[in-house]
Image 1 (tube, rainbow, N blue to C red):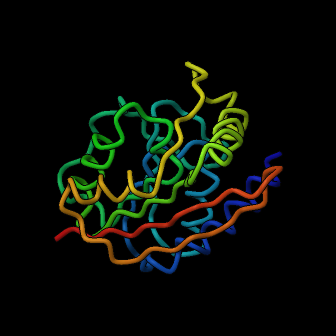
Image 2: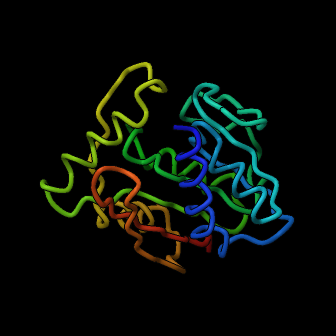
Image 3: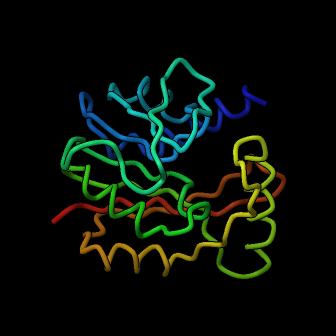
Length: 186
């Protein structure tokens, strides 16, 4: 399973890497197993600080533990903040994005499963639950997140949408729609 996760992380890093510059300092909020943090660090020449509510790392990267609400960093400490496949697991996505905005100088990069209708939402939620079964103490089924919901968070925070792209991922048993959003601080 780790082999597939590493391969998927490399693929996703290629999507995100075009929005990062070599030498940048980046926080990965909700880094999970850190495969994606590791791939980004190797591919882009950036320094990644993986953060999560517990240490789930399966790489040599050390996870910084936080309470899920307040990041343990000063304002504008990082060039960029990554919020990758996180919003559908947290109780208050706006709180997570507000903290990402606080600690990032330049941009927030969001990558999210996008559910356009109930037929897509149910398998996406089930896949999210099964893929992270060993990681979450509360074993909650993730919520379905819509494109409009993510954009409403950006508007509420006064962030400027500078890039957006959709991807389809076939690693799971069905095709999952992803949306990559790059938002800039104004």
